[in-house]
Length: 98
Image (tube, rainbow, N blue to C red; front, side, top):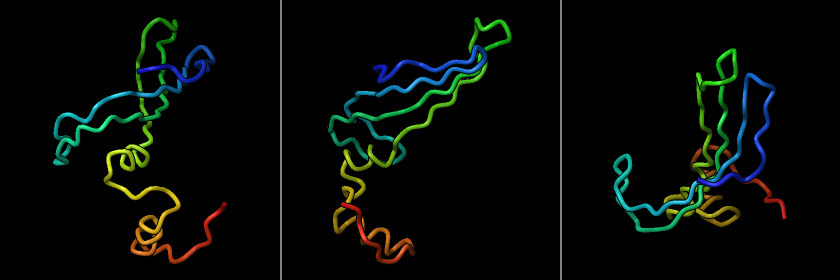
């Protein structure tokens, strides 16, 4: 895990953007290992105890769509595969921004 920017804190809550670097070597959720290297961006949101010494709650928000693209599970952004996926999900045709 690497820090991607400085954490932001108000003394009680801390928000820290990070990136995780890994190789997909084992099955995850029924999805077989690909052996591919992935970089997943995330934001950690942490609540500290009233004194600010201990972590009470930690939540992590991951960019799983980009991870899916890197693993070959989801189509790349802006391609025909992405358009087909959006149509299948009921979003219809839309103009892509350039």
